[in-house]
Structures are given as structure tokens and as C-alpha cells.
Amino acid sequence: MATTSRLGHQDIRIGTIARIGDGADYIRQILPHGFECFQLFAWQHLPPVDMGEYAKQVNDVIGDLAIVSSIGMFGNPLQDEQTVKDWETSIKSCKLFGCNIVAGFAGALEDRSVPDNLAKFTEVWTPLVKLAEDEGVKIAFENCDMGGTWNRPSWNIAHAPASWEMIFNAISSDHLGLEWEPCHQMNSLIDPLPQLKKWIKKVYHVHGKDATVFWDVIKEKGIRGGEQFVYHRTPGFGDTNWTDVISILRQNGYTGCIDIEGWHDPVYKDDLEMTGQVFSMNYLKQCRGGTFIPNPK
Image (cartoon, rainbow, N blue to C red; front, top):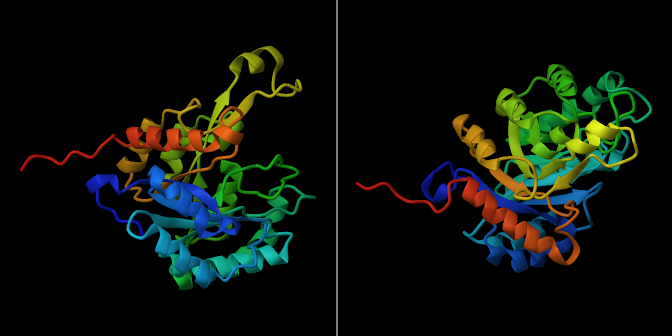
């Protein structure tokens, strides 16, 4: 579990995400860059790995240099029974990695509106939340809309504040919350900072992903003119002041991790992927306050 000590700024750690299918060797290669935590994630389904053996390998690699912040399970549990089973496995596996968060999409029945998804959502997630409560695990819903809308959601109904209200009313539990990031809010033209202040008590994990909004495109051509008006960015290259984000997190008692979600930046990609991620890590550490300086006694 993440320590809550301010010593060395370890109350909020800065890390990145690592695909479970890439094994512990990927983490071994990038750990020396200074990442302090890792979200271990799978897309749609868990790969065919022994989670116990994988956890042993990861724990051996990171030692006391980093922690596992969470497991990421990014599939559609409202339409895919295997994704539900993989959520169960992920929840039960948390203790192997010393973490207590599983993050991912809430899922969506894509042929109906968000409100019309609530019955299926409650059916699927009630037992998963109960399992999480029994295991001492928190579930954190990622905010990405996956290209869906209110009337035709794609993969994930937990993509708007109005849907969060519905979800948390449908299943009331301290073990159910959000995996938040500025990017998805800005993609919907929402100011992320007031939203963070409002929802902070439900924020269990933070993805380090930002956005750049091209207001000139919006003002001249609107959002339906066929021209991209917002780009996902790695923190440090987008519009968000992450010093403000971290200040809000700290002022409200957040003691978790910010894990950079790479592989989205339109500039720092391909051969520049890790260059961008390491720059972002160092930028976020500066936003956290730079090098920790102990007070004089």
C-alpha cells in the first residue's frame, strides 16, 4: 500500500502504466528512469499469465524502489462475460501486488442510452462491489467516453458527471469511485479543476493524461466540422496546470498515485514515447514540489 508520509513526497507518487502482457521485464527496463509506481493493466481481457508468479516477478523487480498502485482492467463488463471474470480475478489478485485498487471501464450496452444501462450495470456490478468490499479493494471507474455518447455509449457509461451521479446512487459503497484525469474532461469541454474539487472524495486513482484544446478551431468551425479540436497529451505538453491538480489532491487528503497514461500524445510518440513519459514524470515531480527538503529542527 502507498505510504501517506510527506517524506520524499511519497504521499503522492508519480509513475506510469505497464501492460501485464509485457511481463516484469518491461518494468525492469524503465524503473531506472525514476518511476515510483506502476498501474499494471490489461486491455479487454487478462492475458494467460499466472498472476501469482507475475506478482512475484514484479515485486522482485521493483523491490523498495516503487510500488504497484493498481490493476487496470479495461474491457466491457456489461457485454462481455470474460471481462467480468477478469475483474473478479483482478480484485482477488490485488493483495499479491500489495495494492488495493482495480480500475477500468464500467461497461456499456451500446444499443441504449446511459439511463437505460443502469439495470444491467446494477446486476453486473453489485456482486463485484461486494467482492471488492470483502477483499478490501476499491474499484475506480476510468472516465473515457471511448467515442460514445449519452444516447449510444461505447464501452463505458461512466464518462460524465451525470452518469457518475446515477452510478453512485445505484450502488452506494465507499469501495466504488473514480479513476480521474483532466484529459477526458477537457475532451468534453469541461473545466477539470472545479470538477476535481467537487468529486475529490470519490477519486481513488489518477491517470497522468492531459489534453490540448484548439479553441480557434472551435470558435471558427465548431466541434462537428470534421476537424479535430482536442488532442490527448502527456502531462507537461497539454493545457492543464498540474501544480493546481496536485494542490487540490493534497488539500483534500489524497494519498495515492498519478500514473502516466502514455501512447496517446500526437507528438511524443513512437521513438519519442519514453522520452515524453520521462519528461512528464519529471514535470509532475516538479509540480509536486520538486526535491523534498526537510525542515530545520
